[in-house]
Image (cartoon, rainbow, N blue to C red; front, side, top):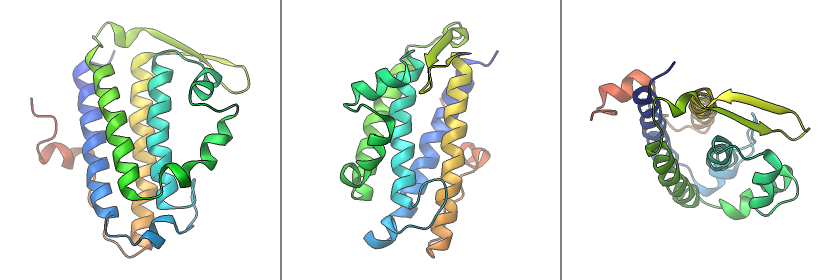
Length: 182
């Protein structure tokens, strides 16, 4: 069993590292922000959009909603439709930051409702091909932070490729900087 305190620490790290990286992305020109470079998502913008969009999606998953229910609630018939709207939804770094901070508020409100006991609750959802998956909530929460960290690594690579010094965003560095002090 993982503790609620550790879950909160992981999310504090998640938001701290996001903020460090967004600050570094501020050095990019608008052209660099959207330039296709490669990777899981083609550009810095698209990777950051995936992080923001993915967090909104994950929050609904933690609440037990199925993939299609989430997509329908977002106003789409297919998951791929979300991706085509990223240029309109996230034309600038400021748009990414604003949406990310709004979702952060929702996630923090959700996390505030959890207890050590609810972390063990089984959460089931149906994926895009009709398979049902069930995990303890704590695993889904840890997976989310791990997923965010994975894609932040890609943004770090993009920043280096574009000539911008990426910030150090290691977990231990976050706590050395005072993250997680209660």
